[in-house]
Image (cartoon, rainbow, N blue to C red; front, side, top):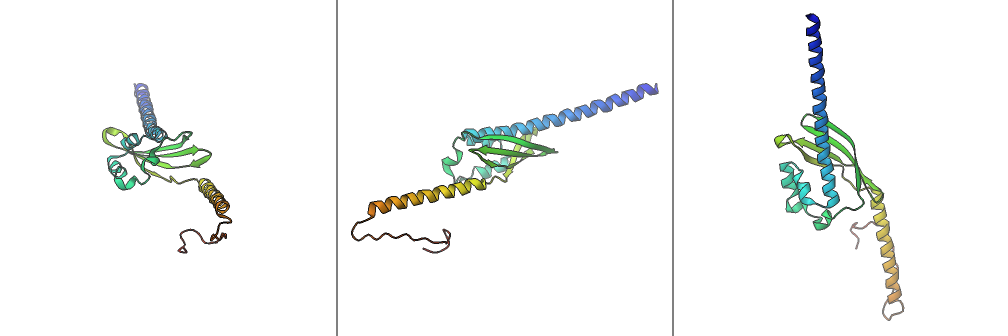
Length: 181
């Protein structure tokens, strides 16, 4: 009789542990699904789909006219973008996903914070660390400098030898926006 009680207790504890494990697995898959949907919306340039993934209070802020500074270009289709979820951590009604996004050899590693909302569905609360790859900024500045030098050379060739036109190159070590005109 005691053996049956002990065996029943062990089986009940085992089933309870399995149930908890299955529930955590489902939670993890549901949260990952929301992050995958966010990345798909970014790849497709689908602003409305992205807004649908946000918590209600974040949706209002993201849809405000002042946050649309990038205009339509901010929501253009992202061809060649790939991503992977490096880590997913769930703690109660909150989850944190670490993501790596790569495009054209440049990489960003944002952190996506999720919150379980209405009807126990995961929603995106915020995205942090979504900064441009420093190599990208360096390459953009180098390209802009090259374009400027090319334009200066074209202007010099077009205006050189004309009456009343003096061409001289001015170089300055000051950074743009330093107050000097």
